[in-house]
Image (cartoon, rainbow, N blue to C red):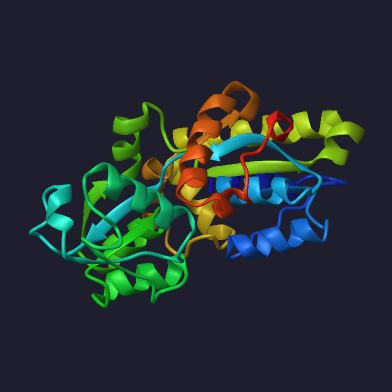
Length: 279
């Protein structure tokens, strides 16, 4: 969504040498990185650490998306964290970003995620879980924008219970650097001007989307990211779209990944990434 103006501009560029492929799941992106077919990639930040720690030829160049996770549901009895005790909450994919962050916040609020609450992983993807919340098959679910806006459009009984980014900020003092933009080290070395060109275009695109949500929503539907202009327009403000170069916030990223590492070292690839991780 943040790069949609950039993506749309490529359609009108003569002799373009950049192509963008939009995939459904992060694992598809990681596969492209494993076989080297992606020169740049956008994926969850902890997955970026895994890719780097596996020795792949990629470096983190920017954070384009910040904290978009929310606890949504139709349970009106939940007013504070302690009200979650003995409830069932659906979370997408054990060990992925929503699961780890939610577990961390539960612990920080005095709730044992393995004893005091039931975490249900029966809906394995963001889309599956959002559909379940919208249809009432899941009364509580950790979901992200833009799927939050899709759920609210389909089911007006569902509401936001906790903004997980806001809860994280209250504990850590900075927003969740949720999504990473990575580039091949070889591309960085061989064509640094191209990297700068892409970063600049992405930055301008994000700013344009935030400043022009009505026009951006049209492009988001045009490129089949979402299927409804109203939903796209509603989703933009809560989607945490802000491109920041990794060198400027490496400490925040390190602190974020350290939370994952302490909870389960495998979630960051068995170790913390070193300083060469950052461009």
